[in-house]
Length: 371
Image (cartoon, rainbow, N blue to C red; front, side, top):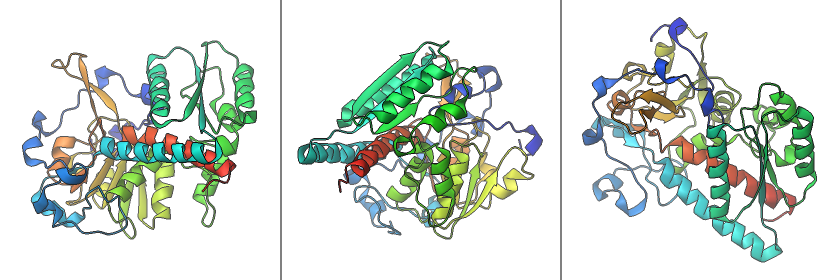
């Protein structure tokens, strides 16, 4: 796995999980299969944090008051702390619920999110269903258009145009991937930049890349990664960060966000020579390549913080489904080296939907100049 030619980099995000490699190529094991749960302290939210640990935490920025703050010095325990994405996402959803209610009471406006689904992919239908439930849970109106697989590009564009002109819709999301006969870029470019809550519009990405410019929206998965770092109080400024993967959906915007936070950023990709050596220099690692257990313990600098975006199915005869989900990072080995790590599942995934809801609320507030 150490040579760059032996690695296969894939796109990795909540909207593109279907592009992951098949089970037959996902039999990678790490750490001898032994779990590190006995040596791992789960960092939860609020009072559940042990008092002995709370006294050792050091505040670096302004994290959420109910989440613990950690730094790399905690790595001396030689067991990683779990960055609980589910707990943080719930906290964010609770905050959004309050803001949606306040906005409705003050000006009578409810944020609205429209989702367009083309085709009958089960995974895409599941994502759309989850997004609809998430909207309902915070009081955001959801609008859904489900089109058949053979729908023409013009028909999809027509629905986007309708939502662009609808004042009750503040965010538009086109579920990816699209059928092969539809040009993805044309569809994404057609979404109004003011309603591009996925953050994929070229002008939003361009603004993200430029100093002194602010995008209207930041792509949800990278935004969720940075939000986890913020909420747990990890210092980013001046740190060495490595992003593994350079997709338009996760890797590239994640690198841009880290630069905005004044990190020194390197990107490891399929043509990178000595990826292990480069990654081992990182204080912060964000991995989004769709390769199960690719990042081994030997890749990780002691005390590093790891955000694992990968969601990869691997064969598991003991699982009722015949497979289990693992990240890009060998979790068992990483637990022995890193200071903190996101689990898979339960890490970045819940944050992606929380950020989508946050972007939708932001859009509605902007349109109505609601503070």
